[in-house]
Length: 346
Length: 267
Image 1: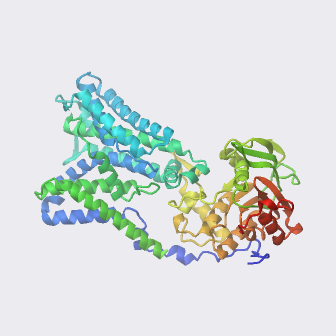
Image 2: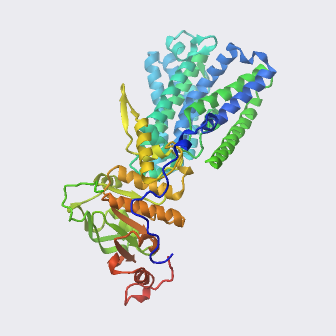
Image 3: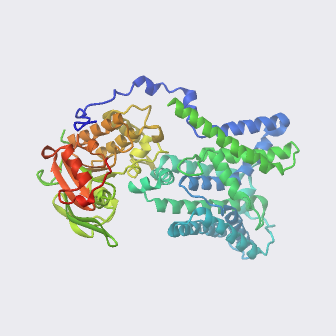
């Protein structure tokens, strides 16, 4: 290049108008590939096919109801984990928070004779507070949320164990609120917690996909510097999401208390990893910026199907973790490979 | 093509920095630098690494406050505390790596931080229809062929990404466009495209500051070229008054009588 260099024509259009044909030739199958839920949908179909071929009762309404019920308690937490993960952070303390929220509700009802509704509000507020504290520490000091919430996981588990001296708390009398939270059944074996999960899922899906806030969540996790340069309040977004996952973890604990009528301070030990697994099976990127609430919910259903399916075919339930481990890697591998295929075609 | 109208008289510089200084500890990053930007003018800001280019644009875009000196926007003295203040005045900065979020769609990027909303019941939801329509209009306007505005930014080329960032500024009625190394990672063909977008921005009455260390990129589009070196301004020319050779000589050898700063890095 010499001194004259390129001299572009002023205001001219360098490239031709977009070809209308290519804009509209958007075949159904091709557009299907663009959905992040494709990997988890395949995983779910495979899991169902395998269990159905081994045990015909797997597709009975009773079993499906059990699956949805089990998925609900994990899924409520996974929706929160997914939301936080998209904004680029992680919470390992949800299992402890889950147990803590359930414990607070159980203790306030049995030991303090509180009004159950008030006790529920206090319990989920405590859990939300724990989430907010994780966020404040992470964001104000600037340490990775992995570390903050690892510490919080141990700390709040210890507190829950101390408060109960390690014993589970059971509620024997009939408390209408507990039936409303998870004890009651809507249809067949589907517990009411599944309905709450569906409602929560829809709300979070709308917030993520259809509101400006959702746009900020994607941007904060996708490229924080760019989001900030465009005026997105990235710190506020993360803090809100930390609080929301705390709230949802507490709710999950209360749902389980409602369904089981008791809460043990050692429950939910694997919940954090299960919630993260459900999110990544559902197409979330561990690094943030990308993800889907619908995918996460399908991920939770996949994991619950494995849990129920193993019991139904008479396999030792110990295999659950191995199966989930396999599905995590397979679903993510499928997503990555599909992503490559799609980018070739573009 | 004059689309931008303001109350300020048109002969007044849209932005002026007077004797700007910025110190980091005992190191002067910028010393007594004056800069004047007229309406519809493209200013090339060149200089070697560490010459003070990025410090200067960070002052002009509200990231840093100058330690001394003053900023005037359309004749009024202004003090900016954040990039948000600068954007409110109509100063938009497109950073090399921070212009767009690659994992999001073009439409979502285009309106990031300024999302159009429509009220449904109690809730403010994204006006996705408007987002798509406006984005596709912009894409057609600047001549980018994509399948749809839903397409992820990661599938676009570097030049297309710059174009979208520039198009965004034009859409939101910015008055000053600061481009930080917009061509540094681009092919010749793509660079030419970006230069044509800069021309388009000027035709619409925007003022552009174009930071680069490649003189050949800025020379064709610039009306004025400012050369910085070690935090000081060593050249400020209208394009007619100078040539690439002369500018090159200044960048490489420093101004006359200052040959001790000789460096052999050629852009």
